[in-house]
Length: 354
Image (cartoon, rainbow, N blue to C red; front, side):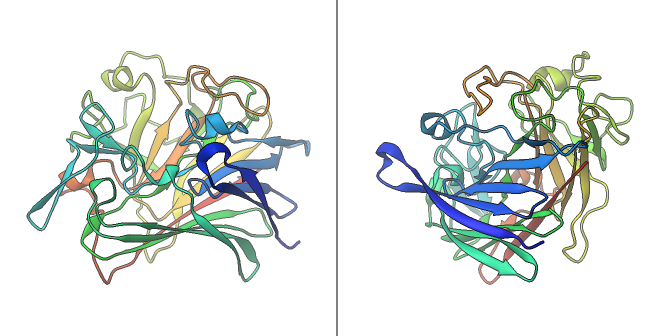
């Protein structure tokens, strides 16, 4: 079955522009993408009985899309996750970044890539079809050096595999760390929490953090801790245990170090998420060295989904493939530097099944 791509326009209200909505359908899965934030907005997939459900947390209300839901499914950058002290040093030169609070720069700054209107166009590559979105980030954007040209492509194949492919080039040495910030609930958005979902992570270590959720630089073994998801177990099984790392984040909001890094730019499995009640499964493969798992600990009903349900804590889980947080301050972490003449490339595959 071929992949169908269609386009519509969603009014941007008082912002003086328009948000485009792109819909990709393979017959097995239907995906929508917004040009605002290069956002993976919805994913509809069947359960074991064939019943379809929308499995991403989202909002159809512009005031929420532009406000408390601004990171839901968005492409976050120029640097996903946290950078300590809102500064980086490259080639001996310090660059001060715009802070987002608590002594850090989070997700690229107060006006990161999630807040931008990207330019989209349909694209076909063999049996895959989808949308490619582009953004120009000028030199000094949010304090980051170098003019950056970025592409994010969402490509669906006839089997229902969704590829998210990132590319970027720069005019000056800079740092880059891009990810997608979708929240998943395989039971369907608004249908309870994800604490009974089974999670498997291909990781023997995670990066513990300080009180600001900045990595200490250590790779800590998951053995004997609530962070051990080497075999499938419910997300909520040890969520409430007394552990200093869980206390800092109010749950899981940590980066796991993948045990088998990608070779030859081929994605490797990072995570498997399963809902035992509907039978839906999501396998995540990536070329990135880490994955941030965030269990929506701080959700407090500020966003209402299409189900007319306000999202509370643990309403979904984000599985953010990425380089490690605060890598510019940790030389032992995989480098996030990008220099003129180089091309940043990253691929994440989402395989839904039941």
